[in-house]
Length: 92
Image (cartoon, rainbow, N blue to C red; front, side, top):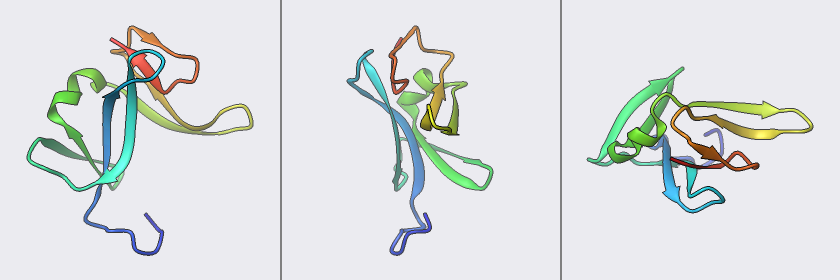
């Protein structure tokens, strides 16, 4: 968000897409909201999620790991029946 040219009208999109080791992969990117999105805020960060993705992500926790063994975003999803070793895909 601090990069030159970042469009501040964009929000953090949280979602899912088909694919990955376990069937579905998580999405995190910046995007403009549309009519199918629910908007919310987390610690001052404007976020959006497509209404149809809520069933897969309800109650999920996203965190940042900065250690030597694990670096990047981590996802704790109570709706996931299966997860993969990389932690970025899941099955329901």
